[in-house]
Length: 126
Ligand code: I3P
Image (cartoon, rainbow, N blue to C red; front, top):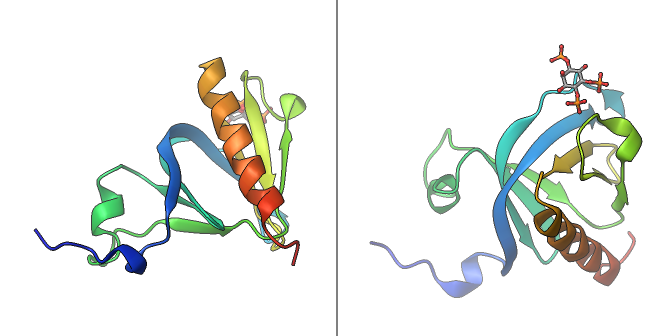
């Protein structure tokens, strides 16, 4: 029932489900493991949640953690060669984290690619 004051959370630009695989952490390669993730894009970061409802509770409840990705200086590119799946792009952060995002639905992945690219292009590079 509590109303969250508007300034407490950054503006959400886009949110929805995509397939996600983290393939590197701090430059160290990880075993690829695809899973469905609720993706929240705001003005300078992306957050990954297991389910949509966690977004509401994450700031209040311990244990419902999301992974937060700083988009300053990040790179985004199509990554056809990194998966047998269609419609895969990669985000690489300054800290050396690498994520693959994927949807079977062409317009959904195109919308996400453009939205994230626009956000990155608007941010300072460092
Ligand atoms: C991986 C799993 C991934 C697959 C990956 C496999 O096997 O099948 O789905 O990636 O291929 O190694 P495991 O679960 O045993 O780790 P794609 O679905 O993106 O092709 P890769 O090694 O060619 O990346």
